[in-house]
Length: 263
Ligand SMILES: [Zn+2]
Image (cartoon, rainbow, N blue to C red; front, side, top):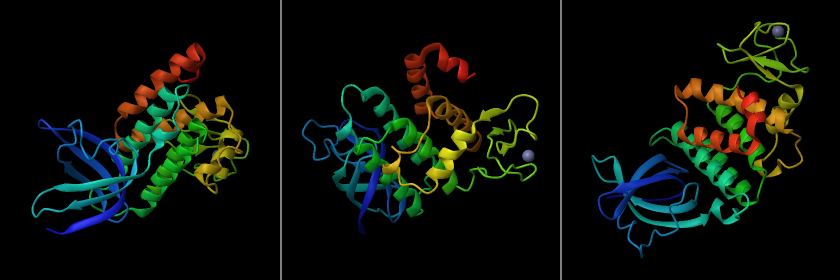
């Protein structure tokens, strides 16, 4: 039984039998794995506090021949995004932790190393621990995740006429690309302001813990939220559960204004 030891991000867990958990984790060097954490649901387990979503940890595990599930030996936490979450921000921040973990889980290939995806995930954990502004971080993370998958449309040139998008754009309703206002269809597109596009161009060159100086007003953030939701849903062919939860939470907080923008 070969033993592997790797840095990893915990993505999610679920119950197995009476006392165990199955842990889904993204390793830095060997892609996404599923493993059994024996006794993880017991009160005094060695896994206590180590299996929260987006914990960055050293994980040791055995691969078993002809079995998809590995056996987890230990999980030694290095960084937890929960450490920086206080009472005031907790619901929205926790909702985002779940959302980021679900996005990585959906996009990470099984047992196939994707170091860039791992580095993106780990840097977002760092940014969350450093109390980065969570809405901006979410738009940044979606943008980078979709870019790494090669499915983010150009934010500089119109997809129809190749003209510049300096004055803003419209996300075309069927093709899910950005077109200039002259090429935009009469109805059904999502309008994207020049400010929102500027944020993306700056985000392309910024680290996630350096988002505080990048300007993104609440309306421009909501434009990107809508555009990114369309892109994610069309590429995953479904809406993420955690994304729906987050949307309901934020509709609760900005009330009717939010539902008007999100129509
Ligand atoms: Zn155009």
